[in-house]
Structures are given as C-alpha cells and as structure tokens.
Image 1: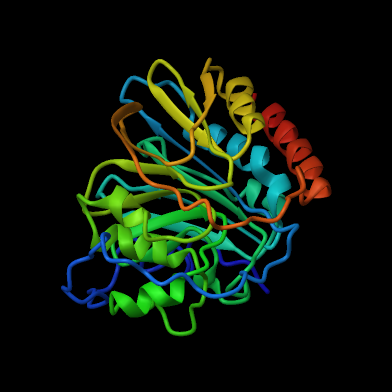
Image 2: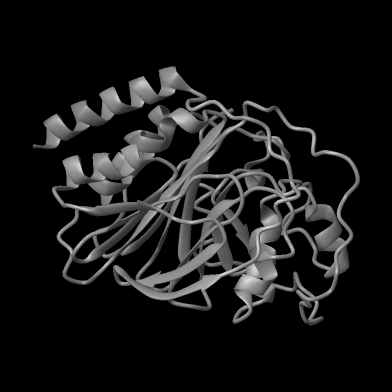
Length: 311
C-alpha cells in the first residue's frame, strides 16, 4: 500500500473533523454489570504494540520533531504493521498522520510544529482490525477523541452495542476504538468508564473538547513515565525515554506507571491522578520483549544519521 502523506487524506478530516452524530445521548453507566464474553480472546500470543508521546510546558526547550523521532525509534521494536503520530494544533484540533509500514519508513516523515506541545506516537502489531484499512491503525479517531492503545480489548463489540455507539467509519473493527468512544461519552467519569473494559491496556488520548492529554495503564501492558523540568514524556519502553534524553538534551525522572492508574497531564505537568479497578480475571499470553528487532535496529540507525545531518 502506498503510504499516506501529510497532504493527503490521513492528515484526515482530523484537522477539521466532520460534524459528529456518532453517539447516542444515553449516559454511560459504569456500575452496570457487563456480561464477560465467553471463552478466550484469540490473538497471536507474540503480538505487541507500542505507544509514546509527550506534554511540554511553555518553557520547554525540547525540539518537538527531535523528541517525536526519538520516541518512535524507542518503540519501533514493538510492531511493524503500521505506524503513526498525532499532535494538537494551535487551533486545538488534532492532526493525525499514519501509514501501513514500520517505524523506519515513517521516521524522516515525522515532523511536529514547534508550536505543538502534545504528541501521541504508535507502532502497531495488529490483532483485530486489518491494517489495510487506514481507520484501523493508530492514532485512532472517534469523534473528538484521538488515541493510541497497546493491548487487546475483548468486549469491545459488546460495549459498542450496550451503549448504542456507532463505529467512527464503515468497516472499522479495531478493538481499541471502544476506549476512545467511551472516553468521549464519559467525560468526567473516565476512570469508571475504563473499568468496563475487559482485556489489557496501556493507552493515551487527546480530546478536542478538553485541554489535557490523558494517560492510563490497565492490565498487563507496560507504561513508563518520564518527568522533566517542563516535560512529561511517556512510552511503552524505558529505552524510548532514554533516547529522548540523549537526543533532546533533557534529564527525566523515570518510573513505571502502576496498573489501574489514570493521569491527566497539561503543559508538562501532572494535573490529576485517579485509580480504577483492573479486572484480573483476564489471562494474557506471555509476550516477547521484542517483536520487530530488525525494525528497531534500522530505525535507531536512521535516527542517528538524521541527528548528525542536522547537527
């Protein structure tokens, strides 16, 4: 498939999204007992994805594109089916770029305006929702919410039906979309909404109706947080944070986010922190530490060459 460029359709109508009539006004009820699906979710036990991003304060000196490329290289090993990034524009809209390729092919095309202070990055090793349909790849838009996810959600179809939510685009089947559909439906009750999800999760999203970047870690997927003087950086791997330190010239205090934790971050600071219940009855399969070693190596080599070229 030919990659989709910034001037083409997958910068999407996301900068100017169409009028939305995607959700009913039926309120979310996180206290309602959802019937858990029978059996086990069928997915490749070696499947991984990677997420990353940042929130930068107005006094941060971090070069936006340099940090974005470092994060992409730092999670490149976690999937090569598709890759993408998104950032909030000065107008408050979220611009999205994604293509069906590994991270190396996207690296040089990754460019973030210096005015942007919020970023999402993703590499995909797909489970549900074939990457040949662009809408299935991350970052995923559902209404005003654009997000990235690492993990599997087993009860997505059940939740779409229970809340009478339509898919954002015809033919979409990616399970991750339900996270961002619930995020839009349940503003102000996000932690409770996440408790309806059955599966594994590390996720982040931007909502055009709110200024913050939201981060959450559920069951069984890693999420690392790096705190700088004017920066919050997150990623599926500690290595990604270390690459940002090396290439962007900042120091981060690094820690792994506990399961069942939800953060709102804005202008490089933690704004709120909440806990939510994680359903540990879901049994995940053992996962490899690295899914795409060749992609990781080539992406980091390309990153080093790009950095030398602009130095």
